[in-house]
Image (cartoon, rainbow, N blue to C red):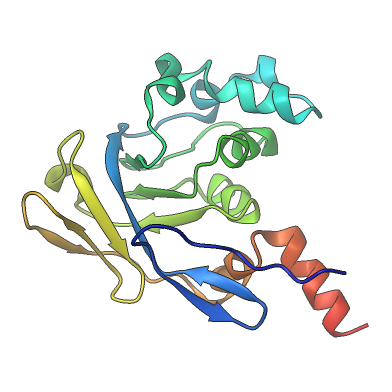
Length: 187
């Protein structure tokens, strides 16, 4: 089985861990969503499918086509209870299939948090982010320091550290790849 190596471009940083990388820094423009954003709004049930293209296209149908408004390096910043509602895994997959790497929120719905983590998406909990941030603001997430900062306005906020188990899953690009690695390591 070929070894996986995540690559990092731009000024983002990563830390090597064995044969994979844990990304430590994200920089992007804030794309703000509110509190209690429901998965059925983010990814309507009509787009549940086993086909990647159908799942991916569903994300652009919810929340007023927000995915169509996002730019490549935008970072979703949400309020409380992000991802409440349905626990369908296709909702989480739609984020991964659209290239979303990181989401910041005041808090996440538990099942959605795990579903997104299983897809290899970094979920950063940061209390107070909704009050501090403005739409379109350039932010940096520094996982080594557990903080989020604003380039333009100079504020800094602490964010919750990622639990070690979650880091292990992310280092491998998601739960399936992590489990494959564990099985190959301990046959």
